[in-house]
Image (cartoon, rainbow, N blue to C red):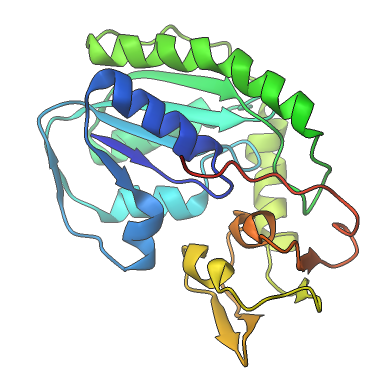
Amino acid sequence: MVLYFSGTGNSRYTAKKIAEISGDEIISVNQRIKSRNYSPVASEKPLVFVGPVYGGRLPRIMEDYIRKVSFTGTRKTYFAVTCAATPWQTVAYVRKLCEEKAFTLLGFNSILMPQNYIAAGSTQPKEANDRILKKAEPRIEEIAGLIRDGKRLPAEQPGKAMMSRVLNPIMYSMMISAKKFTVTDKCTGCGKCEQRCPLNNIKLENGRPSWGKDCTHCMACIAGCPAEAIEYGNKTQGKTRYYLADK
């Protein structure tokens, strides 16, 4: 069973490739959370969790889902994470989570994917992103093949602890907020931002999105807006959005 959380599409893309190669079922954690579905998940095949790295750890929204849900059948588990540079020490927190859930961790691997966190940085041109995706393909296929064959993933050298241990809590307490999201006159009222928000934090009011207090900074709303009508303060103005559309 492949379960993924994804904001701008990197982890969804990876999860679907893994599921295709391993011949496994796939579950969108986004949709489960959005519909408040925390029902048990049963699988005789190993659980494969795919998600992005947020400040050196799994997104808290994904960790919370895993903690709340009862998983029956297998206890064997894989984690594959997507990141723009390094997963830092995400693996250490994954191990702790596996201990809490009595999972047997068969491996943790990371895949380098295009930068997507436009609220605090810049994305790259399409040509650069295409090169990154092409380079990621054999890596994803290798991981998927090992999962299909029930083998352990090769151990990775973990990154420095500074981001995971120190900066992650600061990021969540000081940076992750919906307060700075605004919408321009380019908005067409299509509602895709509302549909994609995993926390149901966006509501259309008179045909324009309005943000509530809950936000995980997944960037699904701003990056996936077809009209590029959403801004995050003055940090995103004039910047190219990155969104890997579902295929």
